[in-house]
Length: 417
Image (cartoon, rainbow, N blue to C red):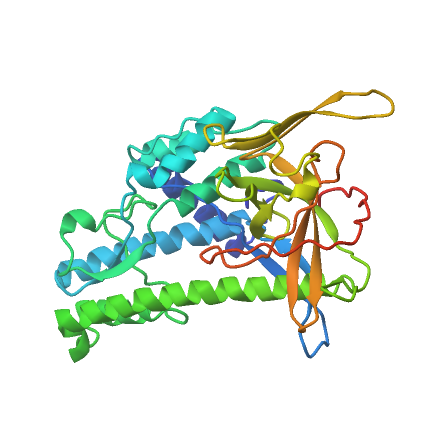
């Protein structure tokens, strides 16, 4: 809802915020018209248990963005752009800026092919404006999340933004692709980013408030500083992902006793059923067929391996087709049935398809725990489709966990939260 919608507060502070909201909409419209991108990420937040010394999470929730968030964002972007231009005028070779390189077509080839083949969406990356327009047009009326999924995947096709010294990079390469800004820096968060602290010092010197520190007067020092900040930023991202992975595991570990893997049985398998979306399908004939999924409710991502137990004739069944051009795995066979012998069965798993998974924690005898996703639907033929995967960092290789020999109880469908 808009800040000034409904019965508006007539107090002076409220009216001031309402005017800021109107200005922020104008700023945002101008950025979008210039080609700024609206991207997405599967970020979640955890609700921690009160009075628990271990701070175990009791719930996982998606971030809810309000217009107040957009208001603050627009003025932060404006401040960053304005300060970047100011320090650049006073220190043409010593300004600490942030750039986002334009992607090349090879980085987007996979996504362009998947969008066109699987959903008939046309993704145009000629400019940031054409990419933004094509993402806006790529909408499935029956499933709004598909558009967010496209934006998440588009983000991953791009190079990360980087800090740099203005004297080390040609002016033609200063452009920030995602924000459609010719000059950009980080100024608004000095309490959590060292780059902002340096920019504050540059701004103070350019305003004559204080002299520029000696360290920031050297291009060589600035170059090393920018490289180190880029490394630290990447490390912070990995640490954040690791924290999310750990708390997600703790959340599901508290849902039940799980099942022990290996040699001696274990407790009853429990978990939560949720919808998931197919991100990628591995159609190589040199490996077992598999596909990667994302669970929006919990921000979980991992690879599902299709095992022989999931296919009536095993993974070498001639009716199992791995179609690289259509980005799908499909089964088209004839199954025996007491009601109708030789009943035709057709199952297809394609990129952007919605599937149903059960999420639970597997306990091993060495004391470790692993987050497991079982494929609930669709099923291949008459054999229940069960797959197991480890949730790991997206940048690391994911290894399948051997499926349990115990008979899996069919889970009841739950409504997606």
